[in-house]
Image (cartoon, rainbow, N blue to C red; front, side):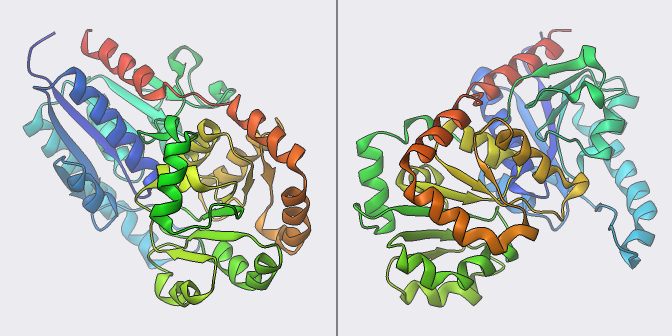
Length: 366
């Protein structure tokens, strides 16, 4: 292998695509300190902010997904795709990558199409139990597909699939220590003897989950629990007033997720792939409320894959009227909490990043 290597990584749109990409880059940087990295994302999406903060250069493509509803944006899609393919071609020609990694999101399509066309080794990291149409199409030409769930040979060439799991944030393996829990309670100003409910709606927030919390504020007070509630930056101005309510802690975004997980006793969460992978490692009782408004309804499929193995409770948005009964039953049943925590932890794949980077090395060695 040559001394200096160029690694191109594309992924974004949500934290579920961005953070795995950054985790892979960080591990590769540890192994190859002299390597050059370039990220490609979609203009005006969160990766254009998060990736530079992680210390990597990023270029943006003028690309977006196809809307489910009839929309003017759909009419622009063919034009955006052509422009993005041309820009992707220019980026690859100038950067000359030795390997291209796609972690999902709008921008990864054009980049991997051009890389495959030019016979550059490519790897797809598919986070979900049900892949989107882009990765299904890209898989036909890509060299390796790293997955987190069983049964994906229905969608991808079986001989290319490697089950690795999804990369997760550094520091999650130590959250059960008493030192970490003490630090977490101090950081978030929590009452250490009160049951803590961590509420997560994803990196951008979740309207339905936020509305559910507001509707049941008095219910939570009656249950004598405290809420650590990440409502999302889009919703913070509407919900920050609840910080004035005792034992309600509202945050636009939680940067110290290791401390948030350490402080929590029960977790209410969306079911994005990265969140599910992290929650498996954490091993705490979880209620999944998946978003039905994502491609292929993959969050529901992610959550169902855990719930079917008795590792979590799945509560669809259409079933939220049952939330008080479901939650109170879980809160009062310590045996159920312990069982859910043990079962979800058995599904964890904590060495995912290393396994994925091992596959990248295989491609670099070709």
